[in-house]
Length: 213
Image (cartoon, rainbow, N blue to C red; front, side, top):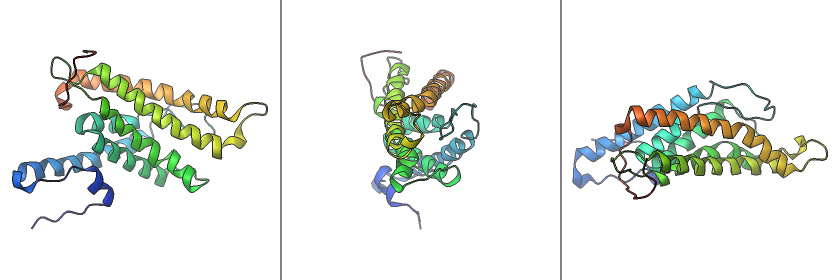
């Protein structure tokens, strides 16, 4: 008897299993869940590998986003979002600064979950491999969504830290972009190296005639 324990989130984000198609699809689903767990653990470990900086109110430059983008480009946006959500929850449990429940959502589960939407830009190039150009757009798009989530949190709940005479919106934008931009660039370099070294790691199905890499 096959027994599986799933949360409502997993039911919503993982594709349903068609039992008529045999054990192969069940195996693929189980493999995806194992990869999600491993990449979540890897992201948690990488969150401790930080580059120092002047971010007294939170934020750092690390490689925490790399495993999330790997899952997004490898398994699609549903798995990417689920991986990001779990990374945000784990980060919340061990490295949180909580002022308000909504701030908690905007600074932890939400900004990491939206990183999985980078998979919407996962296309195959003319060689049948992941298009690095489109992956770059996807990474920027998802990174921008994370940036917006942190900016809103910063304006509403950390506005008191704004220096006198400075606009709270501009301060939040500048503060968050100061660590997110270098983190996005470092993540892009790592993913580029991985895509070149192990192109078969990203089995992309969607094709596009534009922006070949």
